[in-house]
Image (cartoon, rainbow, N blue to C red; front, side, top):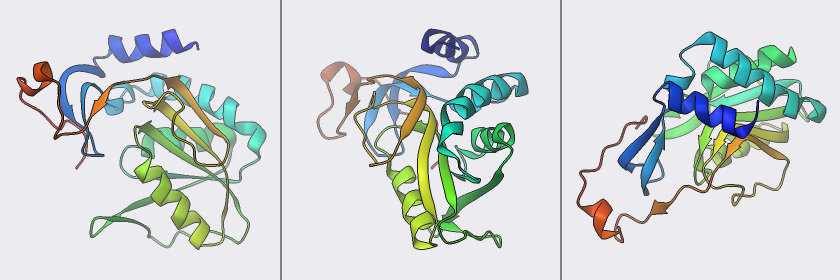
Length: 188
C-alpha cells in the first residue's frame, strides 16, 4: 500500500478528523488521527499490519511490545504477521509499566509498535521499560508519524504514513483555531 492509499483508508472510515483537538501531548492540532476507527475492521488491520510487518521483519525481533491502548491492535497484528510473541505496557498511576506477568529476557530483540506518534512520549516510555528489563529494542514501527520523521529515537523507525501535521502550544494558538472549541477525542 502506498501512503496515499493508507491516507485514503483513514478518510474513508472517518478516522482523519478535522477541527480543534487536544493531543495526548497537550499540544493542539487541526487534525486528529483516530486510529481506532481505522482499525475496527479486521481486514484493514490485517492489511496495515502486513505492510508494517514487512518493513520491520529484517530487524529480526522475537517480541513486539505496544503501549496500551493505542498500540494494542496494530501491535498484536504485526506480531501475528511476524510469527513472534506480543506483550504490552499499560498505565498504572499515570505511568506506563510492564505488568500481567510479562517478562523480557536479557538482550531479547524487541520491536515497539504504536498507532500514532506526535511527540513520541509513549514510545520513549516504552523504550525505557524494555531497556530497564534488559531487552534490546531493534526498531520502532507506527501507523502514523505526525512528525514527518522529525522525531528520532536513535534506532530504526518506520511508519506507514508520515505527515507534517501542524501542532500548537496551547498558550500560542492561531486566532482561527482559538475560536473553535477544543476536543480531546483520544484516550486520556
